[in-house]
Image (cartoon, rainbow, N blue to C red; front, side, top):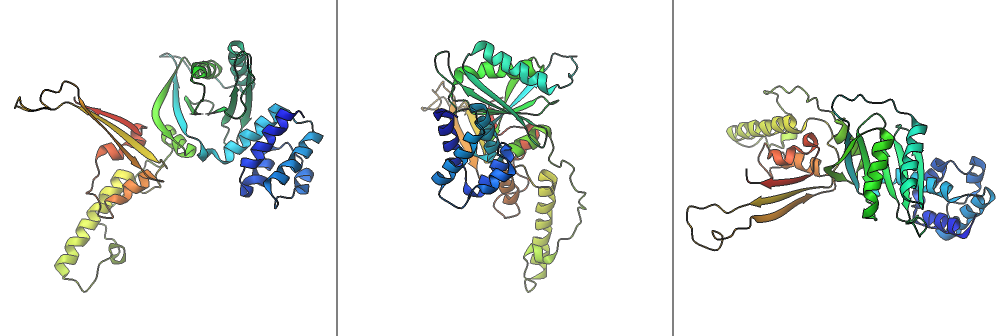
Length: 339
């Protein structure tokens, strides 16, 4: 094992949280169970890294082996990356081809290596049959940078791929070409949907979140405890509050459903409009450029936060469709312009 491989491995171990270390090394499936049992996980990371390096030296670990460890690390800690969603398509009338794993991998590598001499390509299939691809980019005159790879998660027999940020923008068209050819599609388009929560992006893209609203009886009575009502209040006030809370609850369920929402961290709205007035006076009236503004909503769990606004009394029900249509439209970037 040369110095570059050892240093790459050392840095991977050092950035891995101790609480996930054993899980990731086991998922790597490079070291045997007996070797894993010899590792002292309760020690300083630097010492632990040296211990793992010695074990890997015994097995002559290569850069490709350590790249697979990087994939295992990213699979477990996938929420640390920002993922972009891409949708591929065929020409009208074309059938979906049967997926061949070996052919896909061979074709993907061939496209990249035909255009770029120095590139490291690694594949790993997870328990959900998703193809994880790691590409470390070099140039015609420099070796691949193993510390800034691009990750692609592709689900066979579907037109969707999820791609992490690529630090070399010039390689993006090449990556898209390799993905199209290997998966036998003709076109690829970036959707205006991104998040750190890969599983939620997949649920939105595939429409896998529960879209069947529970049947709600419009006259359903909620438990008085859930309404938070004081029984010593005037009965007329209690009745009015209950009716309003029932209405808000019903509208919220009809809008969002009774299921957990996909987890997104933000939604962005760009507004572009021109000033309109019958009066031809003032600075804005003479302005030829449109007025522009940017509004961004952010939260650790944006859709659940939006769902709770009306029941909490912070907003009226129903909310604006611009806020509630995110999963249905498969977007969290919007541009609003004059019709």
